[in-house]
Image (cartoon, rainbow, N blue to C red; front, side, top):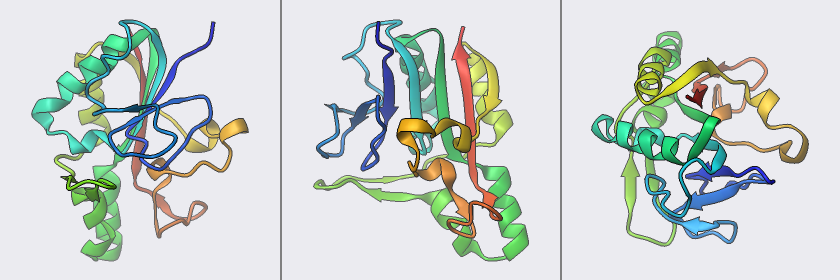
Length: 187
């Protein structure tokens, strides 16, 4: 039986072997939908959910319901793999450079949805402890960080998204990773 893997809020980015869900309109989108509504999937039917730099577009008061919906479709022990701007590292970047221009985008991101009048902004920020607390209270366990170099291999080698965001930009060997990459298993 095939594994079902979801790529939520994927925008232009394509991952081989994933079902792509976004309300933007691109040829690779399998379901044009808001990512907090996965009614097209049955309970306990999905093996893995990947959501990179989309959770921060939901208000803190909405996040638990969003995570609850994602947990609904995940199988027991299924993986929720997230990437969000890392507040702790953004503070470190600011302290190193004393220049707001390096951190304004990750803190207050603005995204104009292609072919629409929709404009979205980041509504919150996370550090490891705050996101782990939300995941724990939402029924997840085995919370840990993940390394994009170990995840995007084989058929997805060369894949690049905000889970690989560095300061200085694109300096993946010497820069500071400003993405908090965290994953957990559904109980």
